[in-house]
Image 1 (cartoon, helix red, strand yellow):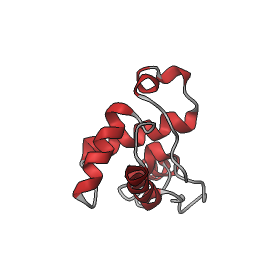
Image 2: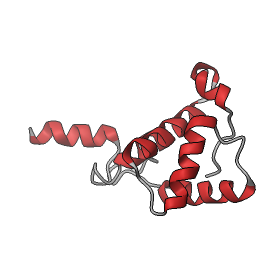
Image 3: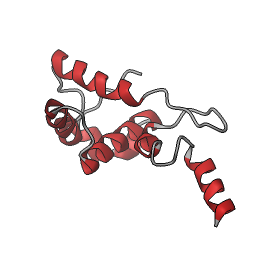
Image 4: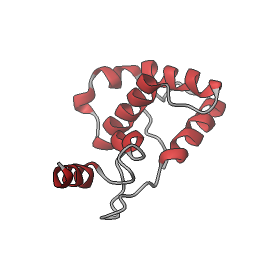
Amino acid sequence: MNFPIYSKSDIENLVDLDNVTQEFIEFICQLTDQDHWEYPAEKGIVTLVHSKGTSILTTKQSNVLNIIVERYDGKECKICGSSIPMSEILYHEMNKGYCSYHKHQLDKEFD
């Protein structure tokens, strides 16, 4: 997956963005909130993207962001095989490999 290109003003005006970009921004927010990185350099880049968008990244910074994105891209639900959206990807492991719909259904079944 290539990450979407957007600016600080785009972050401030989420209503004008496509779904992919909105989901990516949510993913970046979740990474920031959860301190979810493997290397210290990732924190700086994610923090920069969180506050200013992806349009200002250098080639080297873009490469690091691509590594982060590739780590989470392509996850699928164990039941339906649907791709897990970027806005839910950090919960994929916590949800034991299920999409949010099937995790919710399983939780209801066992309550």
